[in-house]
Length: 286
Length: 286
Image (cartoon, rainbow over all chains, first blue to last red; front, side, top):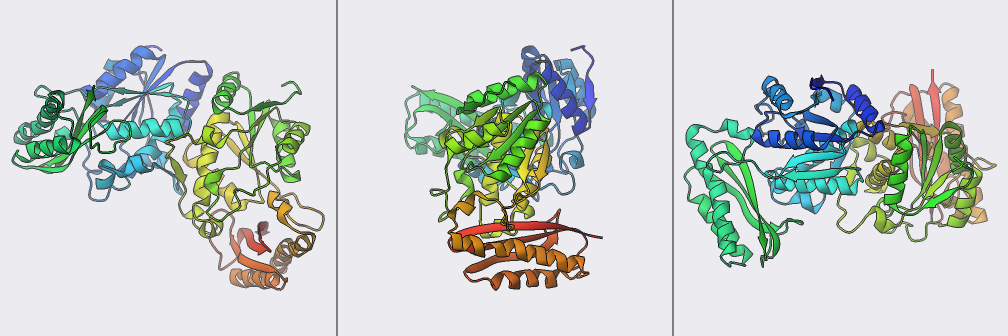
Protein backbone atom coordinates (compact mmCIF):
# COMPACT_ATOMS: atom_id res chain seq x y z
CA UNK A 1 0.00 0.00 0.00
CA UNK A 2 0.95 3.61 -0.38
CA UNK A 3 2.61 5.22 2.64
CA UNK A 4 -0.36 7.33 3.53
CA UNK A 5 -2.39 6.02 6.42
CA UNK A 6 -6.15 5.90 6.38
CA UNK A 7 -8.38 6.26 9.44
CA UNK A 8 -11.64 4.33 9.22
CA UNK A 9 -14.41 5.00 11.74
CA UNK A 10 -17.30 3.03 10.30
CA UNK A 11 -17.64 -0.73 10.77
CA UNK A 12 -19.40 -1.04 7.47
CA UNK A 13 -16.60 0.77 5.62
CA UNK A 14 -13.96 -1.33 7.37
CA UNK A 15 -15.74 -4.55 6.45
CA UNK A 16 -16.09 -3.46 2.84
CA UNK A 17 -12.44 -2.51 2.49
CA UNK A 18 -11.17 -5.67 4.18
CA UNK A 19 -13.32 -7.90 2.00
CA UNK A 20 -11.94 -6.22 -1.12
CA UNK A 21 -8.37 -6.78 0.05
CA UNK A 22 -9.18 -10.36 0.98
CA UNK A 23 -10.65 -11.01 -2.43
CA UNK A 24 -7.52 -9.62 -4.09
CA UNK A 25 -5.53 -12.18 -2.15
CA UNK A 26 -3.75 -9.60 0.00
CA UNK A 27 -2.32 -10.72 3.30
CA UNK A 28 -3.94 -8.63 6.03
CA UNK A 29 -2.10 -8.08 9.32
CA UNK A 30 -4.25 -6.93 12.24
CA UNK A 31 -3.10 -5.50 15.57
CA UNK A 32 -6.06 -5.20 17.98
CA UNK A 33 -5.47 -2.55 20.65
CA UNK A 34 -7.28 -0.27 23.07
CA UNK A 35 -5.05 2.63 22.02
CA UNK A 36 -2.68 4.48 24.35
CA UNK A 37 -0.05 2.84 22.18
CA UNK A 38 3.44 2.21 23.49
CA UNK A 39 6.62 0.47 22.39
CA UNK A 40 4.95 -2.94 22.95
CA UNK A 41 2.26 -2.11 20.41
CA UNK A 42 4.91 -0.60 18.13
CA UNK A 43 6.73 -3.93 17.97
CA UNK A 44 3.49 -5.66 16.96
CA UNK A 45 2.70 -3.11 14.25
CA UNK A 46 6.22 -3.22 12.81
CA UNK A 47 6.09 -6.99 12.61
CA UNK A 48 2.63 -6.91 11.02
CA UNK A 49 3.82 -4.36 8.45
CA UNK A 50 6.84 -6.52 7.60
CA UNK A 51 4.80 -9.69 7.06
CA UNK A 52 1.63 -8.52 5.30
CA UNK A 53 0.37 -6.55 2.32
CA UNK A 54 -1.84 -4.34 4.44
CA UNK A 55 -1.64 -3.62 8.16
CA UNK A 56 -4.66 -2.60 10.22
CA UNK A 57 -4.37 -1.30 13.77
CA UNK A 58 -7.70 -1.37 15.60
CA UNK A 59 -8.17 1.13 18.42
CA UNK A 60 -11.22 0.51 20.56
CA UNK A 61 -11.60 0.90 24.31
CA UNK A 62 -14.04 -1.97 24.71
CA UNK A 63 -16.62 -1.36 27.43
CA UNK A 64 -17.58 -5.07 27.50
CA UNK A 65 -14.24 -6.06 28.98
CA UNK A 66 -14.31 -3.64 31.91
CA UNK A 67 -16.13 -4.59 35.09
CA UNK A 68 -18.13 -2.18 37.25
CA UNK A 69 -15.68 -0.08 39.27
CA UNK A 70 -12.87 -0.70 36.78
CA UNK A 71 -11.11 2.04 34.83
CA UNK A 72 -13.17 2.21 31.62
CA UNK A 73 -13.82 5.92 31.95
CA UNK A 74 -10.34 6.97 32.93
CA UNK A 75 -8.53 4.53 30.59
CA UNK A 76 -5.99 6.67 28.69
CA UNK A 77 -7.24 7.88 25.30
CA UNK A 78 -4.48 9.39 23.17
CA UNK A 79 -5.73 9.08 19.62
CA UNK A 80 -3.56 11.77 18.04
CA UNK A 81 -0.35 10.30 19.38
CA UNK A 82 -1.60 6.81 18.55
CA UNK A 83 -2.15 7.73 14.91
CA UNK A 84 1.34 9.17 14.63
CA UNK A 85 2.89 6.08 16.21
CA UNK A 86 0.85 3.66 14.09
CA UNK A 87 1.84 5.50 10.95
CA UNK A 88 5.51 5.64 11.91
CA UNK A 89 5.48 1.88 12.49
CA UNK A 90 4.01 1.14 9.06
CA UNK A 91 0.28 0.82 9.64
CA UNK A 92 -1.84 1.35 6.53
CA UNK A 93 -5.15 1.70 8.31
CA UNK A 94 -6.28 2.62 11.80
CA UNK A 95 -9.77 1.33 12.49
CA UNK A 96 -11.25 3.31 15.39
CA UNK A 97 -15.00 2.63 15.61
CA UNK A 98 -17.48 4.17 18.03
CA UNK A 99 -18.99 1.97 20.74
CA UNK A 100 -22.46 2.17 19.23
CA UNK A 101 -21.15 1.10 15.85
CA UNK A 102 -19.79 -2.21 17.21
CA UNK A 103 -22.60 -2.65 19.74
CA UNK A 104 -25.75 -1.19 18.19
CA UNK A 105 -29.04 -1.14 20.11
CA UNK A 106 -30.31 -4.70 20.51
CA UNK A 107 -26.80 -6.19 20.58
CA UNK A 108 -27.07 -9.45 22.53
CA UNK A 109 -24.29 -11.86 21.62
CA UNK A 110 -21.45 -12.95 23.86
CA UNK A 111 -18.55 -15.22 23.03
CA UNK A 112 -17.54 -17.11 26.15
CA UNK A 113 -14.61 -19.39 26.84
CA UNK A 114 -14.71 -22.11 29.45
CA UNK A 115 -12.04 -23.13 31.95
CA UNK A 116 -9.31 -21.06 30.31
CA UNK A 117 -11.25 -17.87 31.10
CA UNK A 118 -12.21 -18.75 34.65
CA UNK A 119 -8.77 -18.73 36.27
CA UNK A 120 -6.41 -15.89 37.21
CA UNK A 121 -7.51 -12.67 35.51
CA UNK A 122 -10.91 -14.19 34.74
CA UNK A 123 -11.56 -15.00 38.39
CA UNK A 124 -10.65 -11.51 39.55
CA UNK A 125 -12.36 -9.77 36.64
CA UNK A 126 -15.63 -11.66 36.02
CA UNK A 127 -16.87 -11.14 32.47
CA UNK A 128 -13.54 -9.66 31.34
CA UNK A 129 -12.54 -12.40 28.93
CA UNK A 130 -16.08 -12.79 27.60
CA UNK A 131 -15.82 -9.10 26.68
CA UNK A 132 -12.41 -9.63 25.10
CA UNK A 133 -13.49 -12.70 23.11
CA UNK A 134 -16.65 -10.98 21.88
CA UNK A 135 -14.92 -7.85 20.61
CA UNK A 136 -12.06 -9.81 19.07
CA UNK A 137 -14.53 -12.01 17.18
CA UNK A 138 -16.26 -8.91 15.84
CA UNK A 139 -13.00 -7.13 14.97
CA UNK A 140 -11.71 -10.21 13.14
CA UNK A 141 -14.92 -10.42 11.11
CA UNK A 142 -14.62 -6.77 10.15
CA UNK A 143 -10.88 -6.76 9.35
CA UNK A 144 -10.46 -10.31 7.91
CA UNK A 145 -6.90 -10.87 9.18
CA UNK A 146 -4.49 -13.32 7.62
CA UNK A 147 -2.44 -12.83 10.80
CA UNK A 148 -3.29 -11.18 14.10
CA UNK A 149 -0.60 -9.84 16.42
CA UNK A 150 -0.91 -9.75 20.20
CA UNK A 151 1.55 -9.18 23.02
CA UNK A 152 2.71 -11.85 25.42
CA UNK A 153 2.34 -9.40 28.32
CA UNK A 154 -1.35 -10.28 28.42
CA UNK A 155 -0.50 -13.96 28.45
CA UNK A 156 -3.91 -15.39 29.38
CA UNK A 157 -5.58 -13.10 26.86
CA UNK A 158 -3.24 -14.35 24.15
CA UNK A 159 -4.13 -17.97 25.07
CA UNK A 160 -7.82 -17.11 24.91
CA UNK A 161 -7.53 -15.44 21.51
CA UNK A 162 -5.67 -18.49 20.21
CA UNK A 163 -8.41 -20.76 21.56
CA UNK A 164 -11.17 -18.59 20.12
CA UNK A 165 -9.55 -18.58 16.69
CA UNK A 166 -9.16 -22.34 16.73
CA UNK A 167 -12.62 -23.12 18.17
CA UNK A 168 -14.60 -20.77 15.94
CA UNK A 169 -12.46 -21.70 12.91
CA UNK A 170 -11.25 -18.21 12.03
CA UNK A 171 -8.90 -18.68 9.04
CA UNK A 172 -5.97 -16.78 10.52
CA UNK A 173 -2.72 -17.22 12.44
CA UNK A 174 -2.25 -15.63 15.85
CA UNK A 175 1.27 -14.31 16.43
CA UNK A 176 2.15 -13.75 20.09
CA UNK A 177 5.20 -11.46 20.37
CA UNK A 178 7.49 -11.00 23.38
CA UNK A 179 6.76 -8.45 26.07
CA UNK A 180 8.60 -5.17 25.59
CA UNK A 181 10.04 -3.80 28.84
CA UNK A 182 11.12 -0.40 30.04
CA UNK A 183 14.65 0.03 31.28
CA UNK A 184 14.62 -1.65 34.70
CA UNK A 185 12.27 -4.38 33.49
CA UNK A 186 8.76 -2.97 33.95
CA UNK A 187 6.52 -4.51 31.29
CA UNK A 188 5.14 -1.87 28.93
CA UNK A 189 1.44 -1.28 29.55
CA UNK A 190 -0.97 1.53 28.79
CA UNK A 191 -1.86 1.45 32.48
CA UNK A 192 1.73 2.39 33.45
CA UNK A 193 0.57 5.93 32.69
CA UNK A 194 -1.35 5.82 35.97
CA UNK A 195 1.82 5.23 38.05
CA UNK A 196 3.48 8.01 40.05
CA UNK A 197 7.30 8.09 39.88
CA UNK A 198 7.50 6.37 43.28
CA UNK A 199 4.99 3.69 42.22
CA UNK A 200 6.94 3.13 39.03
CA UNK A 201 9.94 2.15 41.14
CA UNK A 202 7.81 -0.11 43.35
CA UNK A 203 6.30 -1.74 40.28
CA UNK A 204 9.72 -3.15 39.35
CA UNK A 205 9.11 -5.83 41.95
CA UNK A 206 6.88 -7.72 39.48
CA UNK A 207 9.50 -8.31 36.81
CA UNK A 208 12.29 -8.78 39.37
CA UNK A 209 10.33 -11.39 41.30
CA UNK A 210 9.59 -13.21 38.05
CA UNK A 211 13.27 -13.19 37.11
CA UNK A 212 14.22 -14.51 40.56
CA UNK A 213 11.63 -17.29 40.29
CA UNK A 214 12.93 -18.24 36.85
CA UNK A 215 16.46 -18.38 38.25
CA UNK A 216 15.21 -20.63 41.05
CA UNK A 217 13.76 -23.03 38.47
CA UNK A 218 16.93 -22.97 36.40
CA UNK A 219 18.85 -23.77 39.59
CA UNK A 220 16.86 -27.00 39.86
CA UNK A 221 13.68 -26.21 41.82
CA UNK A 222 10.84 -28.36 40.44
CA UNK A 223 8.13 -27.87 43.08
CA UNK A 224 5.48 -25.55 41.63
CA UNK A 225 4.00 -24.56 44.99
CA UNK A 226 7.42 -23.60 46.29
CA UNK A 227 8.17 -21.41 43.27
CA UNK A 228 4.74 -19.79 43.48
CA UNK A 229 5.02 -18.99 47.17
CA UNK A 230 8.54 -17.59 46.79
CA UNK A 231 7.19 -15.40 43.98
CA UNK A 232 4.33 -14.20 46.18
CA UNK A 233 6.64 -13.55 49.15
CA UNK A 234 9.09 -11.58 47.01
CA UNK A 235 6.34 -9.29 45.74
CA UNK A 236 4.78 -8.84 49.17
CA UNK A 237 8.06 -7.58 50.54
CA UNK A 238 7.70 -4.40 48.43
CA UNK A 239 5.84 -1.60 50.24
CA UNK A 240 2.51 -0.51 48.75
CA UNK A 241 2.18 -3.60 46.56
CA UNK A 242 -0.83 -5.89 47.05
CA UNK A 243 -0.54 -9.25 45.32
CA UNK A 244 -3.62 -10.56 43.48
CA UNK A 245 -2.00 -13.82 42.45
CA UNK A 246 1.36 -15.42 41.76
CA UNK A 247 1.44 -18.82 40.10
CA UNK A 248 3.52 -21.35 38.21
CA UNK A 249 1.26 -22.92 35.58
CA UNK A 250 1.26 -25.08 32.50
CA UNK A 251 1.83 -22.63 29.63
CA UNK A 252 -0.93 -24.19 27.50
CA UNK A 253 -3.72 -25.01 29.98
CA UNK A 254 -2.90 -22.37 32.65
CA UNK A 255 -3.44 -25.04 35.32
CA UNK A 256 -1.12 -24.80 38.36
CA UNK A 257 1.67 -27.35 38.23
CA UNK A 258 2.66 -29.45 41.23
CA UNK A 259 5.76 -30.63 39.39
CA UNK A 260 7.28 -28.12 37.00
CA UNK A 261 7.93 -29.52 33.56
CA UNK A 262 7.70 -28.60 29.92
CA UNK A 263 6.86 -24.99 29.20
CA UNK A 264 5.99 -23.21 32.44
CA UNK A 265 4.32 -19.80 32.65
CA UNK A 266 4.98 -17.74 35.75
CA UNK A 267 2.03 -15.38 36.18
CA UNK A 268 1.69 -12.42 38.52
CA UNK A 269 -0.89 -9.72 39.14
CA UNK A 270 -0.62 -6.99 41.75
CA UNK A 271 -1.96 -3.59 42.62
CA UNK A 272 0.55 -0.80 43.01
CA UNK A 273 -1.37 2.05 44.57
CA UNK A 274 -4.62 2.24 42.59
CA UNK A 275 -3.07 0.66 39.51
CA UNK A 276 -3.46 -3.00 38.68
CA UNK A 277 -0.51 -4.53 36.82
CA UNK A 278 0.14 -7.98 35.38
CA UNK A 279 3.28 -9.63 34.12
CA UNK A 280 4.57 -13.09 33.24
CA UNK A 281 7.62 -15.04 32.20
CA UNK A 282 7.93 -18.31 30.27
CA UNK A 283 10.47 -20.86 31.43
CA UNK A 284 11.28 -24.08 29.62
CA UNK A 285 12.02 -26.86 32.07
CA UNK A 286 14.17 -29.54 30.47
CA UNK B 1 -20.80 -25.71 -10.84
CA UNK B 2 -21.01 -29.04 -12.62
CA UNK B 3 -24.02 -31.19 -11.71
CA UNK B 4 -22.02 -33.69 -9.76
CA UNK B 5 -22.30 -33.30 -6.01
CA UNK B 6 -19.31 -33.50 -3.72
CA UNK B 7 -19.41 -34.80 -0.14
CA UNK B 8 -16.86 -33.16 2.15
CA UNK B 9 -16.17 -34.66 5.56
CA UNK B 10 -13.17 -32.65 6.73
CA UNK B 11 -13.54 -29.17 8.22
CA UNK B 12 -10.15 -28.21 6.86
CA UNK B 13 -11.08 -29.25 3.32
CA UNK B 14 -14.41 -27.45 3.56
CA UNK B 15 -12.72 -24.26 4.75
CA UNK B 16 -10.12 -24.43 1.98
CA UNK B 17 -12.71 -24.97 -0.75
CA UNK B 18 -15.03 -22.21 0.53
CA UNK B 19 -12.18 -19.72 0.74
CA UNK B 20 -11.22 -20.44 -2.85
CA UNK B 21 -14.80 -19.89 -4.03
CA UNK B 22 -15.04 -16.73 -1.94
CA UNK B 23 -11.84 -15.41 -3.46
CA UNK B 24 -13.18 -16.07 -6.97
CA UNK B 25 -16.15 -13.90 -6.07
CA UNK B 26 -18.64 -16.78 -6.15
CA UNK B 27 -21.88 -16.37 -4.27
CA UNK B 28 -22.10 -19.20 -1.77
CA UNK B 29 -25.50 -20.39 -0.52
CA UNK B 30 -25.49 -22.42 2.69
CA UNK B 31 -28.29 -24.51 4.15
CA UNK B 32 -27.41 -25.66 7.69
CA UNK B 33 -29.28 -28.82 8.69
CA UNK B 34 -29.13 -31.76 11.08
CA UNK B 35 -29.97 -34.11 8.21
CA UNK B 36 -33.12 -36.25 8.05
CA UNK B 37 -34.01 -33.93 5.22
CA UNK B 38 -37.63 -33.38 4.25
CA UNK B 39 -39.61 -31.15 1.91
CA UNK B 40 -38.92 -28.14 4.17
CA UNK B 41 -35.18 -28.53 3.68
CA UNK B 42 -35.74 -29.20 -0.01
CA UNK B 43 -37.37 -25.79 -0.42
CA UNK B 44 -34.34 -24.14 1.22
CA UNK B 45 -31.86 -26.01 -0.97
CA UNK B 46 -33.75 -25.24 -4.16
CA UNK B 47 -33.87 -21.57 -3.32
CA UNK B 48 -30.15 -21.53 -2.44
CA UNK B 49 -29.31 -23.27 -5.72
CA UNK B 50 -31.36 -20.72 -7.66
CA UNK B 51 -29.70 -17.70 -6.06
CA UNK B 52 -26.02 -18.65 -5.74
CA UNK B 53 -23.04 -19.94 -7.70
CA UNK B 54 -22.42 -22.78 -5.29
CA UNK B 55 -24.78 -24.36 -2.78
CA UNK B 56 -23.57 -26.12 0.35
CA UNK B 57 -25.85 -28.23 2.55
CA UNK B 58 -24.35 -28.91 5.96
CA UNK B 59 -25.49 -32.04 7.77
CA UNK B 60 -24.43 -32.21 11.39
CA UNK B 61 -26.38 -33.56 14.35
CA UNK B 62 -24.96 -31.09 16.84
CA UNK B 63 -24.53 -32.58 20.32
CA UNK B 64 -24.13 -29.08 21.86
CA UNK B 65 -27.75 -28.20 21.19
CA UNK B 66 -29.26 -31.27 22.83
CA UNK B 67 -29.85 -31.29 26.58
CA UNK B 68 -29.39 -34.32 28.83
CA UNK B 69 -32.38 -36.63 28.35
CA UNK B 70 -33.12 -35.20 24.91
CA UNK B 71 -33.08 -37.22 21.70
CA UNK B 72 -29.48 -36.75 20.48
CA UNK B 73 -28.85 -40.50 20.22
CA UNK B 74 -32.10 -41.45 18.57
CA UNK B 75 -32.31 -38.36 16.31
CA UNK B 76 -32.97 -39.75 12.79
CA UNK B 77 -29.82 -40.18 10.72
CA UNK B 78 -30.56 -40.89 7.06
CA UNK B 79 -27.43 -39.81 5.22
CA UNK B 80 -27.95 -41.84 2.05
CA UNK B 81 -31.43 -40.47 1.48
CA UNK B 82 -30.23 -36.99 2.45
CA UNK B 83 -27.50 -37.04 -0.19
CA UNK B 84 -29.96 -38.08 -2.88
CA UNK B 85 -32.40 -35.34 -1.87
CA UNK B 86 -29.70 -32.65 -1.63
CA UNK B 87 -28.43 -33.57 -5.06
CA UNK B 88 -31.88 -33.64 -6.59
CA UNK B 89 -32.53 -30.15 -5.21
CA UNK B 90 -29.38 -28.70 -6.72
CA UNK B 91 -26.79 -28.85 -3.93
CA UNK B 92 -23.19 -28.78 -5.12
CA UNK B 93 -21.65 -29.84 -1.83
CA UNK B 94 -22.81 -31.68 1.25
CA UNK B 95 -20.58 -30.90 4.22
CA UNK B 96 -21.03 -33.65 6.82
CA UNK B 97 -18.26 -33.38 9.41
CA UNK B 98 -17.64 -35.68 12.38
CA UNK B 99 -18.30 -34.34 15.88
CA UNK B 100 -14.63 -34.47 16.81
CA UNK B 101 -13.70 -32.48 13.74
CA UNK B 102 -15.89 -29.50 14.75
CA UNK B 103 -15.25 -29.94 18.48
CA UNK B 104 -11.70 -31.22 18.86
CA UNK B 105 -10.27 -32.03 22.31
CA UNK B 106 -9.82 -28.80 24.26
CA UNK B 107 -12.74 -27.09 22.55
CA UNK B 108 -14.01 -24.45 24.97
CA UNK B 109 -15.84 -21.65 23.18
CA UNK B 110 -19.56 -20.91 23.42
CA UNK B 111 -21.51 -18.26 21.57
CA UNK B 112 -24.39 -17.12 23.79
CA UNK B 113 -27.29 -14.83 23.09
CA UNK B 114 -29.06 -12.85 25.77
CA UNK B 115 -32.78 -12.26 26.27
CA UNK B 116 -33.74 -13.63 22.86
CA UNK B 117 -32.41 -17.06 23.85
CA UNK B 118 -33.91 -17.18 27.33
CA UNK B 119 -37.60 -17.31 26.45
CA UNK B 120 -39.79 -20.08 25.04
CA UNK B 121 -37.61 -22.85 23.63
CA UNK B 122 -34.59 -21.49 25.48
CA UNK B 123 -36.38 -21.66 28.83
CA UNK B 124 -37.51 -25.24 28.31
CA UNK B 125 -34.24 -26.36 26.73
CA UNK B 126 -31.46 -24.63 28.71
CA UNK B 127 -28.27 -24.37 26.68
CA UNK B 128 -30.06 -25.24 23.44
CA UNK B 129 -29.61 -21.92 21.67
CA UNK B 130 -26.04 -21.54 22.91
CA UNK B 131 -25.36 -24.83 21.17
CA UNK B 132 -27.14 -23.66 18.02
CA UNK B 133 -25.34 -20.30 17.92
CA UNK B 134 -21.95 -21.92 18.51
CA UNK B 135 -22.27 -24.49 15.73
CA UNK B 136 -23.77 -21.97 13.32
CA UNK B 137 -20.85 -19.58 13.93
CA UNK B 138 -18.39 -22.41 13.21
CA UNK B 139 -20.28 -23.63 10.13
CA UNK B 140 -20.45 -20.09 8.72
CA UNK B 141 -16.69 -19.66 9.21
CA UNK B 142 -16.03 -22.93 7.41
CA UNK B 143 -18.48 -22.42 4.53
CA UNK B 144 -18.26 -18.61 4.05
CA UNK B 145 -21.88 -18.07 2.97
CA UNK B 146 -23.05 -15.12 0.94
CA UNK B 147 -26.55 -16.19 1.96
CA UNK B 148 -27.74 -18.68 4.57
CA UNK B 149 -31.17 -20.32 4.33
CA UNK B 150 -33.21 -21.36 7.34
CA UNK B 151 -36.82 -22.41 7.83
CA UNK B 152 -39.43 -20.33 9.60
CA UNK B 153 -40.70 -23.44 11.39
CA UNK B 154 -37.91 -22.91 13.93
CA UNK B 155 -38.91 -19.31 14.35
CA UNK B 156 -36.96 -18.44 17.47
CA UNK B 157 -33.88 -20.16 16.03
CA UNK B 158 -34.18 -18.08 12.88
CA UNK B 159 -34.34 -14.90 15.00
CA UNK B 160 -31.28 -16.00 16.91
CA UNK B 161 -29.29 -16.75 13.77
CA UNK B 162 -30.21 -13.33 12.39
CA UNK B 163 -29.10 -11.69 15.64
CA UNK B 164 -25.86 -13.67 15.71
CA UNK B 165 -25.04 -12.70 12.14
CA UNK B 166 -25.68 -9.03 12.85
CA UNK B 167 -23.92 -8.94 16.23
CA UNK B 168 -20.79 -10.83 15.17
CA UNK B 169 -20.70 -9.01 11.82
CA UNK B 170 -20.82 -12.05 9.57
CA UNK B 171 -20.89 -10.67 6.00
CA UNK B 172 -23.94 -12.61 4.87
CA UNK B 173 -27.70 -12.39 4.45
CA UNK B 174 -30.04 -14.72 6.33
CA UNK B 175 -33.05 -15.84 4.30
CA UNK B 176 -35.91 -17.21 6.37
CA UNK B 177 -38.28 -19.25 4.18
CA UNK B 178 -41.88 -20.24 4.93
CA UNK B 179 -42.73 -23.43 6.78
CA UNK B 180 -43.60 -26.31 4.49
CA UNK B 181 -46.59 -28.32 5.73
CA UNK B 182 -47.88 -31.82 5.14
CA UNK B 183 -51.39 -32.26 3.81
CA UNK B 184 -53.59 -31.48 6.81
CA UNK B 185 -51.24 -28.75 8.02
CA UNK B 186 -48.63 -30.51 10.17
CA UNK B 187 -45.36 -28.53 9.89
CA UNK B 188 -42.60 -30.60 8.30
CA UNK B 189 -40.03 -31.65 10.89
CA UNK B 190 -37.42 -34.37 11.10
CA UNK B 191 -39.00 -35.29 14.43
CA UNK B 192 -42.32 -36.13 12.74
CA UNK B 193 -40.63 -39.47 12.01
CA UNK B 194 -41.14 -40.33 15.70
CA UNK B 195 -44.94 -40.03 15.47
CA UNK B 196 -47.23 -43.05 15.27
CA UNK B 197 -50.13 -42.79 12.78
CA UNK B 198 -52.50 -41.92 15.66
CA UNK B 199 -50.11 -39.28 17.03
CA UNK B 200 -49.75 -37.79 13.58
CA UNK B 201 -53.49 -37.13 13.60
CA UNK B 202 -53.38 -35.65 17.12
CA UNK B 203 -50.44 -33.44 16.12
CA UNK B 204 -52.70 -31.59 13.69
CA UNK B 205 -54.04 -29.69 16.68
CA UNK B 206 -50.95 -27.43 16.64
CA UNK B 207 -51.43 -25.99 13.16
CA UNK B 208 -55.23 -25.95 13.50
CA UNK B 209 -55.10 -24.05 16.79
CA UNK B 210 -52.70 -21.57 15.23
CA UNK B 211 -55.01 -21.05 12.28
CA UNK B 212 -57.98 -20.54 14.63
CA UNK B 213 -56.00 -17.99 16.68
CA UNK B 214 -55.03 -16.12 13.53
CA UNK B 215 -58.69 -16.06 12.46
CA UNK B 216 -59.62 -14.67 15.88
CA UNK B 217 -57.09 -11.84 15.39
CA UNK B 218 -58.30 -11.13 11.90
CA UNK B 219 -61.84 -10.99 13.33
CA UNK B 220 -60.70 -8.10 15.53
CA UNK B 221 -59.34 -9.59 18.77
CA UNK B 222 -56.43 -7.43 19.98
CA UNK B 223 -55.87 -8.75 23.50
CA UNK B 224 -52.70 -10.85 23.45
CA UNK B 225 -53.52 -12.77 26.64
CA UNK B 226 -56.92 -13.74 25.31
CA UNK B 227 -55.47 -15.04 22.04
CA UNK B 228 -52.75 -16.94 23.90
CA UNK B 229 -55.14 -18.60 26.31
CA UNK B 230 -57.56 -19.56 23.54
CA UNK B 231 -54.60 -21.10 21.72
CA UNK B 232 -53.61 -23.03 24.83
CA UNK B 233 -57.16 -24.21 25.48
CA UNK B 234 -57.61 -25.36 21.90
CA UNK B 235 -54.48 -27.49 22.07
CA UNK B 236 -55.31 -28.92 25.49
CA UNK B 237 -58.61 -30.21 24.20
CA UNK B 238 -56.76 -32.77 22.05
CA UNK B 239 -56.16 -36.08 23.87
CA UNK B 240 -52.52 -37.05 24.52
CA UNK B 241 -51.20 -33.54 23.83
CA UNK B 242 -49.34 -31.70 26.59
CA UNK B 243 -48.79 -28.00 25.93
CA UNK B 244 -45.36 -26.55 26.75
CA UNK B 245 -46.30 -23.00 25.79
CA UNK B 246 -48.67 -21.00 23.59
CA UNK B 247 -47.99 -17.32 23.12
CA UNK B 248 -48.70 -14.23 21.05
CA UNK B 249 -45.45 -12.26 20.83
CA UNK B 250 -43.75 -9.42 19.04
CA UNK B 251 -42.23 -11.03 15.94
CA UNK B 252 -38.89 -9.23 16.39
CA UNK B 253 -38.28 -9.30 20.16
CA UNK B 254 -40.34 -12.41 21.03
CA UNK B 255 -41.79 -10.55 24.02
CA UNK B 256 -45.44 -11.34 24.83
CA UNK B 257 -47.79 -8.61 23.66
CA UNK B 258 -50.61 -7.25 25.83
CA UNK B 259 -52.00 -5.38 22.82
CA UNK B 260 -51.53 -7.10 19.50
CA UNK B 261 -50.08 -4.86 16.85
CA UNK B 262 -47.58 -4.86 14.03
CA UNK B 263 -46.14 -8.23 13.12
CA UNK B 264 -47.27 -10.82 15.66
CA UNK B 265 -45.81 -14.30 15.99
CA UNK B 266 -48.04 -17.00 17.43
CA UNK B 267 -45.79 -19.63 18.97
CA UNK B 268 -46.67 -23.07 20.23
CA UNK B 269 -44.79 -26.06 21.59
CA UNK B 270 -46.35 -29.31 22.73
CA UNK B 271 -45.54 -32.90 23.37
CA UNK B 272 -47.50 -35.50 21.46
CA UNK B 273 -46.71 -38.81 23.12
CA UNK B 274 -42.92 -38.79 23.54
CA UNK B 275 -42.39 -36.37 20.66
CA UNK B 276 -41.90 -32.65 21.17
CA UNK B 277 -43.23 -30.48 18.35
CA UNK B 278 -43.15 -26.74 17.71
CA UNK B 279 -45.00 -24.57 15.24
CA UNK B 280 -45.78 -20.91 14.65
CA UNK B 281 -47.72 -18.50 12.49
CA UNK B 282 -47.07 -14.86 11.63
CA UNK B 283 -50.01 -12.47 11.59
CA UNK B 284 -49.80 -8.85 10.51
CA UNK B 285 -52.12 -6.71 12.59
CA UNK B 286 -53.09 -3.55 10.72
